[in-house]
Image (spheres, rainbow, N blue to C red):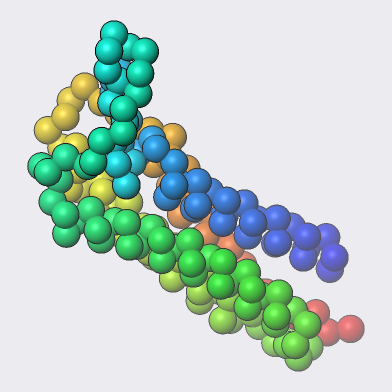
Length: 162
């Protein structure tokens, strides 16, 4: 049982790390001279030696961008709260009971990051052909998969009866 708990906690911490990394880091979309994330844009200037921070272009619709930002932050919050509830229930839950609340919170985190990624994919960079999705975007998809797996494990998992 101890190995299972260590594995579940490791999976959960990895998920939280990936979600925070994807939300904070600066590589959701990039080209040779520009990196864009949810919060700003870095552009290379002066003969490829200086990166300059700029605001998100006005061509991006603010309502969609704010929706992506909000859902990404909510995914991080739900994942952290889920871990806290799991650790609390680990000591307070009766034998044979399921970890339903942390599972539901993880699945809500999964839903939030999926909405953020779907809106970002659908509404940004449609016309830009010279760029590609960055590692933060890919890590967000890995975070989505891990939150789905972790949430499913929590819903199925029972506290062992000894």
